[in-house]
Length: 165
Image (cartoon, rainbow, N blue to C red):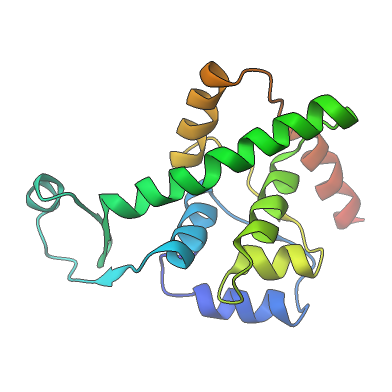
């Protein structure tokens, strides 16, 4: 979604309330947010991934993402996971993936972000595989340093079914 060259199109649709929901992979969410925190560089599809990796750069198609961008993303996300856990304990909230994404969208507070506009316009972003990516790694490692956060996928399945009616 965000790395395939259609980020601005999807953002426009969400910003102008032209969709009822968005369904994406964890990568679609992550890359949208990471682009708000640090620049992504346009490269070439033909660049050698192994060589780039040795120099601390990741390739997504023709986009180059320095490792530091993911470090910044982690530094930004972990305190939000702490907040989610605190709210879960204090208010008995069980988070769904779409609620987590909405919170990330609120926190990014960047009008270039799909997640920002989705949160602002109360348009759910469904990511059934939210843990399939760096967000999943962060949630997993967070469970060791600050255990107890529950993210319930079934809430989103029910929400999606309501939208389909």
